[in-house]
Length: 238
Image (cartoon, rainbow, N blue to C red; front, side, top):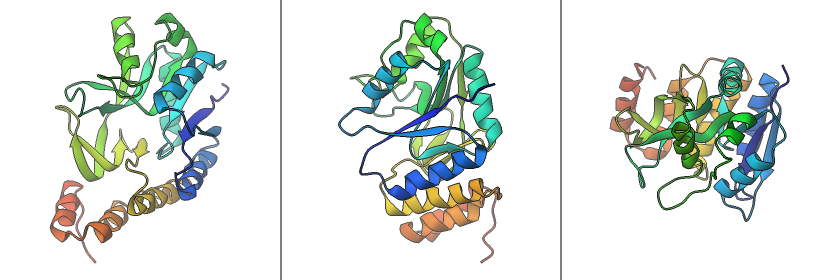
C-alpha cells in the first residue's frame, strides 16, 4: 500500500528546530513528509485549495508542531481515511463553539473520494468555525463517520475539551499515538517538542518526568509541577 504524503504547513517565523524535529520523527517512521511554507496565506485557505487540487487518494494534514508517536498511529489514521471516515485529533474552538468537538487538522486524514462526495467544502475559518471545523459539520450532515483521537495527557493543561477533558501545551492523544505542542513560538515549548521528538525518533520510551521538568523550569511553580506529576502518576525522586 503506497504511503500518502503528509503535508505540514508552516510560516517563516517558525523555529528551524521545530522543522528539524518533526522531520526526524517522520524519517524514523519512513513516512513521506512535505513541509510547505505558506507565508501570506491563511491556514484554512491553504488546506482548502490543497484538498481541492490534490491528486492523492488520501489527504493527510499535520501541523508543523505535531507528529505521530509511532508508525502504527499513522497507519491507523490512513486506514480510517481509506474506510471513508474523517480522522482527526479531537479539538474545540473555545472562543467560538466551546461545546462542539471536531476533527482538528493538527493531524487529519480523509479520502479524496469522501471529500468529493460531501461537495469539497471549505476548511477556512469564519465567524463560527476555526480552520477545518466546517469539514466535520459537513461530513456529519452527509452521514460520514468521524474518527476522533482524544487527549489523554497534557504537560501543561490550559483549555477544556468540552465535557471530555482538557488539552494544553504538549498534549498527547490516544494510547500514546499523537503529540501536538501548541503555542510553538515560545522557546520553552520548543524545548519540549524537541525532547519528545528526540525520544520518539530514537525509539526511546516517553519520559514524562523530563517533559514536566522542561515546563517547570520556565513556570517556576513547584506546586503546579507536583500537581501535574500526580495527575500522570509520577513520583518526583530527584
